[in-house]
Length: 495
Image (cartoon, rainbow, N blue to C red; front, top):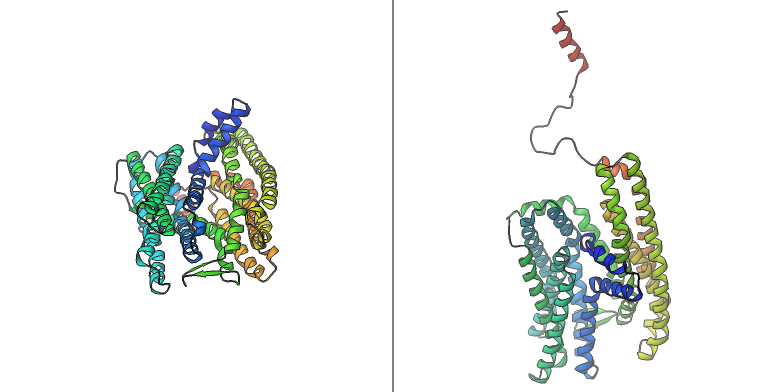
């Protein structure tokens, strides 16, 4: 994530330095394109296809089957790609810093292979279960599997383009893919008389495969050489295993509360294979969108303000005096605290406004009952959750992998334990697990940031080694004997 944001601040500073209302709007729009535009393009395309093809007139069973298939495609593709995101991004950042660009392709192929294998081990048994137990057509199940693998490829490859800071092309790829998907759905329904749900699933799958092909082609265009050094990538992943644990636990925490409610009385089972809780899942989606702007705010302010202080401290460490290092450190942590507080203030105002709009407007469009009873607590929980994620990003800046891992562990454990308990409470308290888990994770991250502040000198100046690690005969524990030294001195003097 830190690597993905590198370079955004330069462009944002160029936009915001004009200090005009139009510049502010352009800057906010640019931040949105960089962060959440692809997600909005996907959601907008699905909604547009549903309205154009009159999905609401389709029978209930096939409509819910398609909805569950798309839901599973997104959730489980994110879960299977999550463990490798941060560790491979860190490896690429180190390689680029050392200007070993020929090592990017081995990293790309190793990560691609591991993602495909892990995703297939999860997806293939489920598709077999769909066909054998759920009696779903083989072609439909295969189309869903291809869509799932397309999502896996898209979510994996996209970080390589983020490394190249080519955010505009990422958005263009998603726009082209979703436009192709929309046109293809119309062609399949009106020219080839496909059922609406089959056409939508096939079109979304084709759109994601097209995006994946565009991204892979661009990666190969950027990184043309291949050093063939595959083993160092695996060694690096082994060394930084805490990054893998952190990413997986954090991503699992985003969905574990949904999985808990998939086992309760509000669940819905489709084709004896797909399980979901429509009311809780919809409330979760609304809560996430209520607070999604925090991602835009975080990236904008982080790159425009904090990164400069972080860079100033790094430069002071390299060649500054002790007093310069201490002053730069104080400025950096003051900026860190200011950014967290600004994020809380700005996002709180935005979340309150969106929450009131949702409460007033959504019941007029059919969102009422159980969904709106669950929504308030989840909205509060996701507000804290995104603040916790901001703290994890700061921990990544200071390379505090232990702190980030502990944060994600407490976050996941808190959400799981409290959500299991909340499932027996009234509907208003269903989201209390997200609140408690996020608050617990935020507390751990905050305490860890304070610990880093107090021990930063040790972290920076005492992390190196004098003797390189190597395999071989162990050196003797005694390196100096004062008595032997004195004996040799007497022999030299002839005593």
